[in-house]
Amino acid sequence: MVTSPYYYSDYYKQKTRFNEEDIFLFENVPERSVFSGFKRKPHDVFRVAFIGGVRYFNSIRTLFEAAKEIDGLEVLVAGKGPDSERVLELSKKHSNVKIKGEYNYKKEIASLYSDVDLVYAVYDTKGINERLALPNKLYESIVCGIPIVVSKGTCLEKYVKELGVGFSVSDGNVDELRALFLEIMEKNYKRFQEISEKESEIRESFFYENVEQKFIEWISAKVTSKTRGD
Image 1 (cartoon, rainbow, N blue to C red):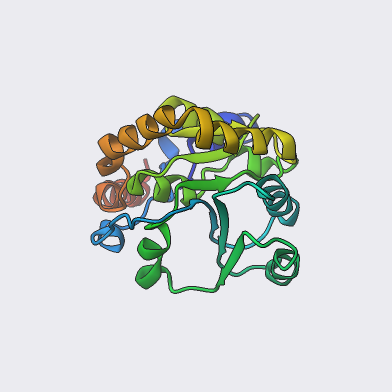
Image 2 (image 1 turned 120 degrees about the vertical axis):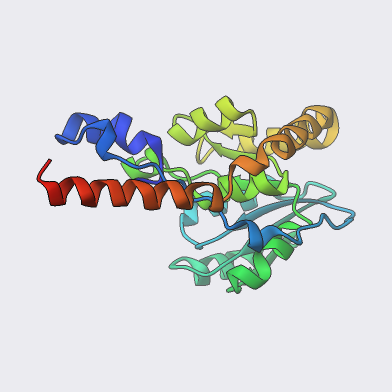
């Protein structure tokens, strides 16, 4: 089982003897029930959020620097991880950064996204996992109708462009990220709204319940085949 189609097409296909039929794609999609009560809340700032395990310190630092002194823009970091303390300390230097800290996923995730305008998922692209992976944030952003910004040169960027659900910038490039924020806020909000509408149209395809039964059937077929010695 893989959580990104690119793990097979861009890695395992060349590195192993697995055939495509031996691979089951089970993306990091959320349960429908977790977002069943999701509603957008009115708010008076443009909020960019990093939600999830707090790591990739340099990427978060880039976010803080890019957002610095932009009127009407606020950054939210919600979650806990190996870089939590460093991020918290760094946030004290930025008046428009809010830190949520650890949260209960099932009880709080929908509420966290309810007043977010842009999901931040720009990671360091040096590692192969970061170049191939499709994170939870992608699917959470889609089901909530919130555009996402990701790293250029990754499979995540390729998928985001294919679906038409967000933007991409070079990881570590403060000026490029800042320019994107300003473009969305001052010049190109119509494009931003179009992405949100597209996500609303496709959101039903990205829930756990759509895949669970297919996975159970796939596992059963594999077990039966092995038992028979196929």
